[in-house]
Image (cartoon, rainbow over all chains, first blue to last red):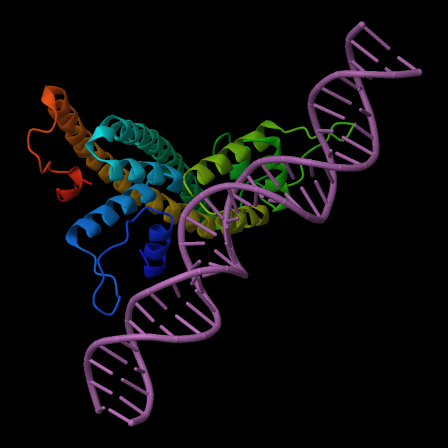
Length: 128
Length: 128
DNA sequence: CTACATCTTTGAGCGCACTCGAAGTCAAGG
DNA sequence: CCTTGACTTCGAGTGCGCTCAAAGATGTAG
């Protein structure tokens, strides 16, 4: 997370103006850092800035917004669960395809394409 | 995947010009569909278009590019594995935070903030 | 004192990946 | 014959999330 990004987050209201040193430089407290870490986690898992803004605004209001905030987090958690499934599927698909490439390489090492009409990996279903 | 996206993929070279019906309409073969499905999987797991272009170009060349293509897939698979870890961590963090919100809601239901200086979730380390 | 680095501000710019709109062609249905 | 609708082309536009540039203030080292 760059300084530029921190400024940006402040501008769009994700971070409240933090304490300053006498010279005007920002001094981030541990609480600030924890909050920034949380923002980072949410972004890293594809929560849109808009959603984070909604959450941050509710957080400013206080405990009375607990339900709404919880809903946001629960929704995002569900989105994360879905993402994990997609990633796992892609991971499995890649394992399959990588194995196929190893086979192709083996065939080449053994001595060029023995079969003239080499079965391109593209022609194998779901092995492209 | 919208028609617009398919056209876009064709324009940027991810999809080779496909067969056409007499009227000029595209006819996607099963092989085309498999390839498109693969592209979709890679995009869904955050492979950049540029990388997919590199892969698609190598694929056009043929089996001799197996090693390079395998490397691309292996790298992406590693990226996916890393992504899964991040998502799992965020998922765990959210479980924690959601539980905390339930506690806050419980406290509110029991009868308003008993403690005047209510411990805002913001003040709890890594519970923001 | 002089460099030099590091922060400050603001608005503008950028890269990515679509996404859309306009104008045109064609095929079938009523 | 005329409408409807699905396709075609191409360039231009959009939204997101940064990312940077310029000009200025301040602090630290030699």
